[in-house]
Length: 321
Image 1: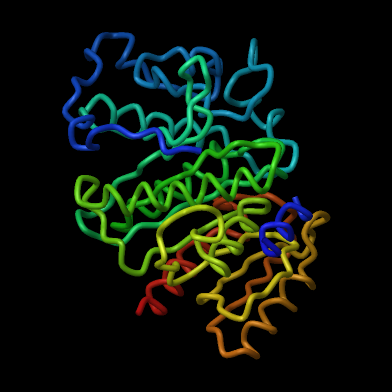
Image 2: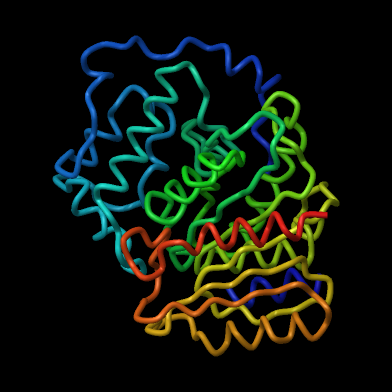
């Protein structure tokens, strides 16, 4: 199809369980001294990946690459397109995820698995209030890696703290087409299991940074059905961080965009022009330019970008129909 060909030029089967609820009832790991150990900036990445709390999906916590000998404070080496990677923030969110597991909560749902049974795509779930709307966060990485530890988990934790049910999708890298197919499948999964997950499917939003923002924008413009999904309902808002995405279908949802004026990868002019085009067609849209910020700042904690996520959340809720 023309739209799918367009996506390929710029850049499957759902692994089903009988019910999500049945998975939730599985016993959580025994709270041994090992399990109680907290991660910090000096924790080895392999120690985190080997923690029983993340058994079965620890390969998706960090970008693919050599982690032997690397400590959490050095994780930025795996995220070359990102900036302001905060080891303390990473440790806090990993400890939060581990604590959720130790409370007996399921935090990961596989979407696709390899022949060896290991997941290659899936959703990490950060619970908000029961029956509150949901958001899916799509971390970036140039479709070469998925920066969930910096651009996904911290944002999801922020949203969960505001009562929003937040999912971080870790998708297959290497192809924009595959990544967007995974996102369409993730949307289907949440809609299919909304009752068990205790999330509302009304007025959901898609968030993304860099390559992830392209994914969110494309699904917002054309819908999951264009990528092989079955969910017809479009998001009520798309939240985009620093991307050069320019495509417009004419049917975009409300769109919020943020970028730094020192971004050497995503042109702030390009982003602002797209927002102006959306406004011209009658789409609610807002643009935020952050002075002094480069590409890939994530949540922006402790930087001039701090606070953008709250603005984006307010924009989404204001434009929920």
